[in-house]
Image (cartoon, rainbow, N blue to C red; front, top):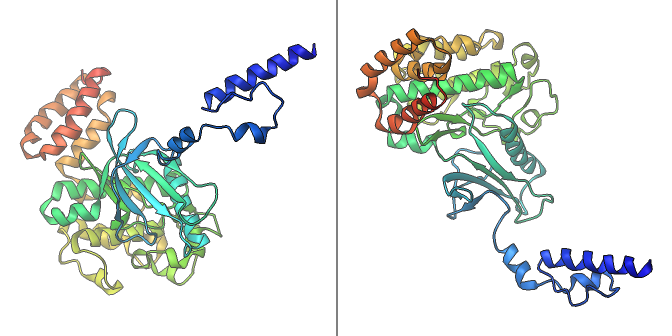
Length: 371
C-alpha cells in the first residue's frame, strides 16, 4: 500500500511540474517543495514575466498624459489579443509621491467602470488592479477604442458640428439620468476631460474616480478635496453643504453638466463668473443651460426634463433614438422611419454612416428587426 501511494505522488508531481515548465529530474524523490521549485526552468519564467501585464490587450505605445484629470493617467493605443481589434488603455502608476487617496480614486475608476454598464458609458473590456501598492505598480483599464473629447473639439469645434454636438450632449444627459436617478450614484467629475468619443462619433462618459453612492457620507468626493475638479462643481460642494445631496441627489452632476455645455462651446472654464456669458451658446440651448445652474439645487432639472429640450430636436438625435427602438416597431412604423431616413442621408457624416448607421441596420436585418 505504501508503494502505491509513493507511485501516485511521483506521477502527480511529474505531471503538474511538467505543465509549469519545470525539470522533473527529482520528481520521484522525497525532496522538499523548496528544493523542487528551485529546478523550475528559469528561461520559461523569464519569458512569462516579459509578456507584460496579464490583460486582454497589448499596449502599443508609451502613452500620452491625460489632460484635465487630477490623477496622472496615461492614455495608450492598444490591440486586443483576441481578434486584434483596436482598443484604448488607461494606466495610472503608483509612485513614491502617490497618496492613499489617489490610489483609492484610481481603483474606484476601474471598479466603477467595470460595474456601470450602459450604452452611453465608456465600454469596459478588461482591467488590472495591483494587489499591493508599491512604486511602479499600475492600475490598468482596457476599453473600447476612443479619443478624448478635448482632442476632437480641437480639430472640429462644437459650433461647426451642430448635429454631432447635440447628439453628444444628449448622450451625456442620458448617462447622467441613468447614473443619478436609476443607480443612486453621484458621478462627481463631469467635465470635458471625462468625455471620450468612439470611432463612430458617439460620446462616452467615463472619469469615475470620485463616483459614489449618494448616501455615502465618507465618499471620495466628500473627503478628497484635492481630487475634485472644482471649476465644474456647484457652490454647495465648495461650501461643504452636503444636505443638498439628500434633497436633490442629481443636483451636483446637473450643475457640472451645465458647466460642460459652457466648456464645449467656450473652452475650459476660467472663473465662475464666466458661466454668465451665453454669447457663444446656441440660442436653443440657453434656457436649458441656465436651468442647470440654479442656486437652489432642488430646482435644477432632472434627466427627463433635460432630454425634452428643443435643442435635442435634431436629425441625428432622432435617428439614433429611432434606431434603438427599431426592433420594437411594427411594419408601418418601420416604413415611415426608412422613408424619413432616406431624406437625411446626404446630411449625415460619412463616419457615422459607415461606423454606426450601417452596422446597426445590418444587425437589425440579421435579427429580423428591420422587416
